[in-house]
Image 1 (cartoon, one colour):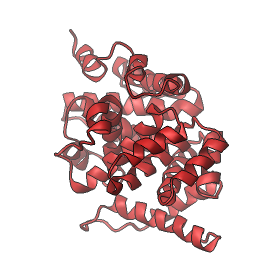
Image 2 (tube, one colour; image 1 turned 60 degrees about the vertical axis):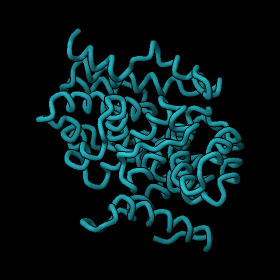
Image 3 (cartoon, one colour; image 1 turned 30 degrees about the vertical axis):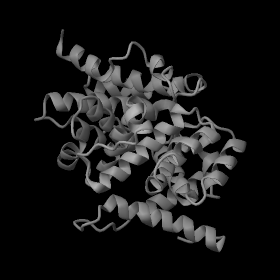
Length: 318
């Protein structure tokens, strides 16, 4: 078996992507609703392993429907991270996000976390040395999504968090688990809330942040469902809003805004997607670095505080 063949087997040993959605605990509607997301991710992943040269890879990724391109870049991040694990003297991932993937840095880093989880690599030693010091934490989100999706019994039922993660990484892990909850429960509000409520209360805020991000970025629900979700999310509506705003910022940066992103921001944030994204950009300015608290968390807290202020005052000022 070739080296690339071994990587393919290591990352995707399931007989088919649809088979994962047919496992116990997944809503029957999940595959019909999100199969295009999975297929786009796999297309980006396989394209990367076939030829990782950026001049070949990027046109293939950009040929995918704009609304789904972020997932293709996520797959590319997954493939490049796997190659970097194989050849650690290279840093293809960071060269990618500093170059053609700069508009898609968030989903690319999510893909890194997927690869690290699949290859059973500890994520923090990898990203702390190799990725952006602020956004590199997003890889932990991808790691958490993988565990919530592919290790469902351990993560969703037994509520186990990997012991090798730092205390802060566990929060980003839960954000990824929240995204997995959205996808595996087919964006059905009642199912999503039931699963989140089964977790300890101290973990629920980050789970809701992941739900907001997944729902605004990937869609899957209509306005009635989103309004129901917003009502059920109390007292975590600001985490839900922050997640949706992050999704809007990522899509606007990549110039692939989707109608479901606009809808989620209007319902969760009471703002347009452009206004919600602006909050994310403004609150990232002048982040302190080198302190005991990660800059990424300071950024999250700033954004959440803005949405809280908006709710209390009924207006938004920057």
